[in-house]
Length: 435
Image (cartoon, rainbow, N blue to C red; front, side, top):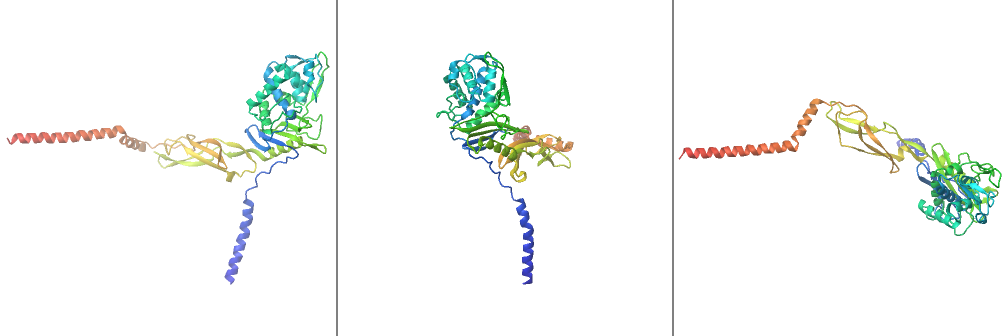
């Protein structure tokens, strides 16, 4: 009985030491989703790694509202390219389409393409959008055709435009994923962000209007219209709203070596809170907190050994990675458990001499079984050749060569023929003697 009590006591003591250590080494829970509320659709994309890391109803068709101006800016920039100083004469027909936010262009006013792009991409001016549309294509209808053609080229197949401003039309729709594709294209388009990231734009004096300044309507970027949504990492692209489509924002944000595009569509305004901005900030902060570049491979990290022949006192050499590798991964990645390596060598063994740094293979780094990067494998030491072993090896190789084997066979055949021939000759001579 005493022995049983002692055994049980020891068991519980051991268990009390093991259980806490198990609890401490359990893997961290997967990343929690960001807080996104009171909105129809959202999408978050990392530019450097070409990876979407969050999507909410990303394929659901919604009204694009002011995000339409991203495409208006794209088509206008690609149409005029290096002709941004070209002049546009504003007409009554252009102004007849205008409603909503505008800078008050006058019929007969002469403006520059550059200034209309500034008014469009900084302030979201609808009259600037129509001036650009007529100047680029001759009519709204033809400009909209260019917009839809470009959307299709970019891969935004679920997007359909009917005007260049985003003012509500039941037939005009997009998706959060399409909008992210369009925003990415705009981001990479020369001069687009030169306008879209400005806090303000000063329009020069024209033949009808004095100089004046317009301000960025993206409240993540600018404090001019609202002060409660400023986000210092934002660079801006577009923001706006319609009654039917709700509030929308498309913005870029950069922190260190990571840049994201956040798209939030169809958000509500509740108790004074515009949720397009709140959700965009939550998404971006979640991304910056939850993902980073992690070192998964260090230079000279030991991977494997490979046999070495023709050397004295050494029969193998260690192979290490030649490069470091940092990969964009969740911050809670367990490097020891979730990162694995697979390697191949160029040959089964190396022959001395071996030189330090000599290329010998390749290692593939994998995250949860998926390849995420590669590096060369190189030798870690100089290994000299033993000349005697080298000579013996050459002799061995020669004896295994086709030439040697063919020569040997030929010699054997010639010897056999010689022996048989000599035997036949001796036999013939012997017969002559006894006649």
